[in-house]
Length: 202
Ligand code: GLN
Image 1 (cartoon, rainbow, N blue to C red):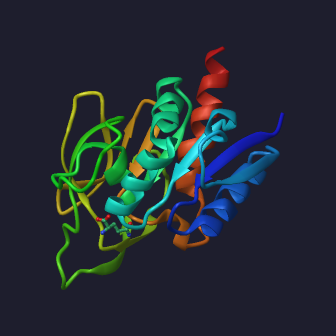
Image 2 (cartoon, rainbow, N blue to C red):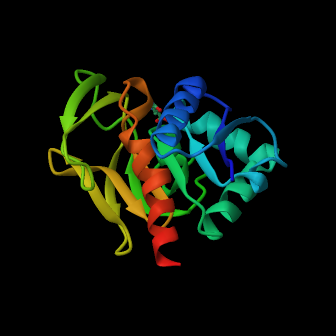
């Protein structure tokens, strides 16, 4: 069976995410097809979804206007995996603490946008991430942090004691950009580890 992965292509590093998904799929001997999604109607066909970074105000507005917002919510409610990175994490949350972002309310977290301030606008850190054996080279670009999480949310990684990677059911959210290095372990963790767990539970 070919895995259909949708990358929401409103903004952000669409081809880099597509490459990372294909690399992770190959490592699992899984055939995959990546769809770049710019309109409603395709998300229901996707087994997994990726909500990339960009500008959360713009992304949330476009998702609402196109009807993709509803489809993403349905995808998550059906228990299908989704990786939400940076602005995608902000959009997926319950509260971006900014009225200009209409959140999808699928990830029980409150977010602080642009939380690292000007001096640390962009930086790279080797992060310890729960579920990965070796540290992950995480690239942060005007990144958010997670202020608070609900009890169903597992914190996978933190910077200065503030969560930057979380998991809740089928969703993995990161405040960094896992597509900007050759390391596809976050895509693997979000999509293929979850799939493997589900299969072994059958
Ligand atoms: N600063 C952006 C926002 O608040 C997120 C940045 C990113 O996705 N790299 O929406």
